[in-house]
Amino acid sequence: MCPTGIDELDELLNGGFPRGDIILVAGHPGAGKTTLSAKFIYEGAKRFKEPGVYLSFLEPKNDFYRFMRALGMDFEELERRGLVHYIEGIQTSTFEGIEDALKEFMDAIVKMNAKRVVMDSATAITQVAGFRLTRELIKNAMVNGLKPLGITGILISELPIGAPSVGYGVEEFLVDGVIILKSTIENGVLVRKMEIRKMRGTSIPYAELYFDIAPGVGIKVYLPPRMEEIPAPSEAQIYIPHAKEIRFLCGGYLRKGSQIAFIVREPASVLPLLIWWVLGYIARYGGTLLIRTYSKPPQLIRQAVKAHAKKFNVELSRIIIDSINPTAKPLYVMSQYNRESDTRINPTFLVFDSLQQVPMVHSNDWDDFFRQHLNNLLLRRKLGITSFYIYNVKSSEEIPIPLDIYDLIIKVRPEWRDSRLYLYLEPHPITVSGPVKPLYVQYKEGGEFQIEVVGGQ
Ligand SMILES: Nc1ncnc2c1ncn2[C@@H]1O[C@H](COP(=O)(O)OP(=O)(O)OP(=O)(O)O)[C@@H](O)[C@H]1O
Ligand SMILES: [Mg+2]
View 1: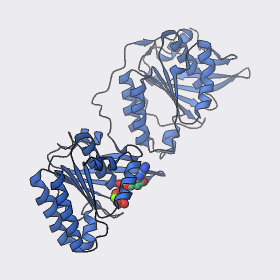
View 2 (view 1 turned 90 degrees about the vertical axis):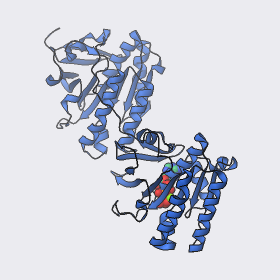
View 3 (view 1 turned 180 degrees about the vertical axis):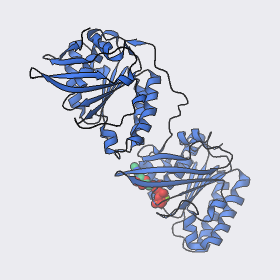
View 4 (view 1 turned 60 degrees about the vertical axis):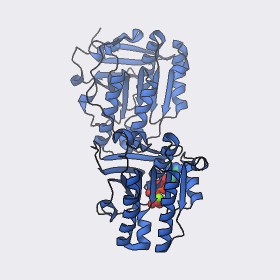
């Protein structure tokens, strides 16, 4: 196998492209064809010490090196070490010119003992030579020329916007694998997708993948999480001594790794209460709290946390605040970010604040959100991260939350008694098996809460 150097893609392809194969990378203008191919050459040289040659009819070397440096690939350094060679065929407007460039290409391959090559692009050759001759040229260079040497190559081809993704030209019949890159705008953000159409000798479990082009990394592919089995809830208990009434909401006790949703009617707010519960626990037993908010600046949360941390004598370093603007990135990028961050930080408790913002800004199509959400939720259960998901709703709203993905759903509404505001917390009956009772919670001065069990203890 010939690793592409994009780790997620290599994992998916069982190690990379089959060695000696020619892969067609086709895509819309700006889709990332050059970046993907550059990464293949760059990582091959850098990590695997395999010399590579990049032939471009489209970009001057200086531009290419500059763009790629911004994406974390220093071609200059590798060129100095004799590991890469860039051939600039941009002035070529005649058939002879193309032949010359191809000859230079083959000479460089032999001279450097190259293991990887890229031709950018077949479309550029077609514009000069026409379809029939292009086919001959590519067949001679890429197939007859490279195959016997065991060289793995990428052939780039442009796909006009709006063109159907099949029938992209003459090249597909010459190649062993086909990858199509597409970019679309969804809900105002640029979404990049990669389709693996054909890959000789490899079974492809996921045909369509999201990816991103980002400074420093170049190209990042998002694999859907592979979770074959639903992890069971943990048997370990979480006992919160200063708020033992919480057991009335859980039908006995709170399990470690529980995934709990709070549906909160405005103007009730449950975040201060959760912080108070959790920090009281951490003060006694240790652990960490991650608060991920989709609506508040980090300073505001830090302020809310500070008073409790001081009172419980919890170091501020045990509380991590993650404030995310939900409109900035597509859903799958946020989802992947959360997975990576949860795995790395592995907090004892995780509180999501204003989670309703995420599906609301991304299409209002809750199905899409819950698909991603469910996978992440299962991962947290597996990691034993006790998680609270706060969804804020207006009094008339119903959120289409699937009841069976959470271990517990608690509805929270404001209630005034004697002109004082109380929170009324009531577990959703479907989500608990043991006997439960609602709670009245009142905020007291000095950051304390008074809890009253409805119907007595
Ligand atoms: N430093 C960067 N940070 C983030 N994105 C970048 C950066 N540089 C380029 N891009 C993105 O990468 C894309 C260009 O990628 P690339 O040149 O690989 O595409 P291409 O398919 O080869 O395009 P073309 O059809 O023009 O050859 C652009 O959409 C641009 O938005
Ligand atoms: Mg390009």
